[in-house]
Image (tube, rainbow, N blue to C red):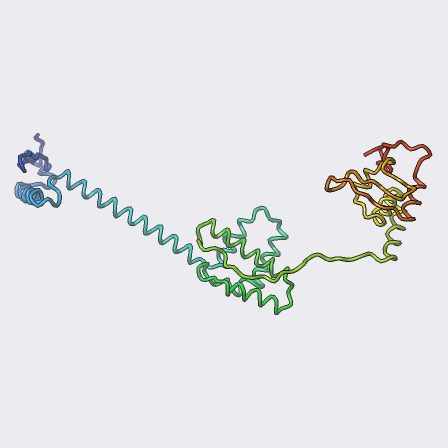
Length: 296
């Protein structure tokens, strides 16, 4: 192989050697690319020594493969280090930063009013305790402090529970985004009954029925039946004349919420109401309280 190298011909170097009866031949390259006789001799000496010791490259091909492998390992190491650095950066994110930059934008299914309430509660109770902390520094003790602060300020157990729910929801979003792998810290919340039981007074009942009678006689009758028998709306609407025993003051309720037939009892008020509404020859299957356009 010849080619011009300035005013003289370029030279191409190649060689071979024997090792354990095996012929090893390879090319070095062009003189114009930096190869010389002395450099080739030095490299050949190195390859022979490596072949004899069993360590290191024995030809340019081996050397290239070793270099490529080393580069691949270095690149993989750099990528792994970058991944670790990214993971560490995510773990170092403060709760405050995550709440505003990640959690709130993820709440696409929540109403604007709900988000305003959650943001207000965050700034009032959560941020002073958790805002500056990364997730791996947040412990049950921190959550207990929020609970204690709210209780001391006279907030109800339900309000405390709501704030803890907001905190847990943000935590779950953080777990889903690999910001933390730790589960939400366990704390004990005060149990409470949020139901409110209240009975209408006689004066309130009279006022309600009086107003309903002005609006709709049908609605008035429904209310009288519900107040005096405890029947549900569907049971009142589905009541037929065949279900009624006025003589004994008994109603047979068939279309109930739990799909089981049950009995309701009439007092003087409901018995008088139904007696007044009862036609002379009622259709047994006819509804006692039909809709405006006929049976429901």
